[in-house]
Length: 190
Image 1 (cartoon, rainbow, N blue to C red):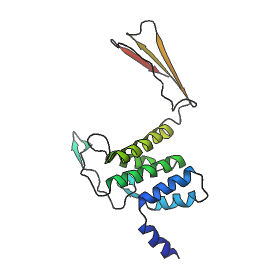
Image 2 (image 1 turned 90 degrees about the vertical axis):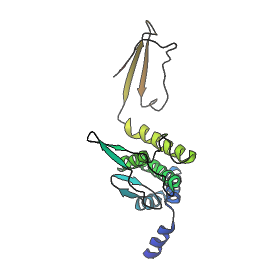
Image 3 (image 1 turned 30 degrees about the vertical axis):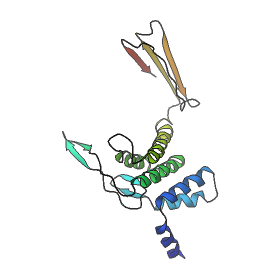
Image 4 (image 1 turned 180 degrees about the horizontal axis):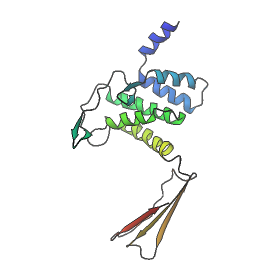
C-alpha cells in the first residue's frame, strides 16, 4: 500500500498539491494536515532555497564584484510560471502555519524575478506578489505592537502629520499628503 501512495505522489504535479493544500487550509478542512504533509514532502530545498517544481531549477546565476555576490539575469526555464505559482501557494500555506522555511521560499521567489521585476507571466506575478505581501504582513511586522510615525515637511509649515500603527491597523494603508512638495521632509518613527 505504501508503494502505491509513493507512485501516486510522483504522478501529481507540485502545483496541484500546493493549490489543494492552500484551499484545504483556508477552508479548515479535516484533511488539511495531510495535504500540508504531502506539500512538505514534495518541496525542493537546494542551496538555501525552497520551492515547488516538476523539475529541479538551476541555481540563479551570479557574479562576484567587490567581494560581494550579485544575481545576474536568469534564462527562462521549463515550467517557470507553474513553478512560481506553486511556490507562491506553498508560501501562503507556510506563512499561515508559521513554518520555519518561509525565508528559503521567499529567497527562491526573489531569484526568479525577471529584469523588469515581474515573474514569468501576469498570473504567476499576481500570486507571487500576493504571497510576498502576506509574508511581509505576517512575518516582518508581527512583533510591532505600536509604532508612531511623525512627518514634518517644509511644504507644510506649522503642520505635523502623525500616523499611529498598531495591531488593529498595521495592514491598512495610511498616508500623509504633501501637495506641491519642496524643501525637506523629516520622518521620525518610535
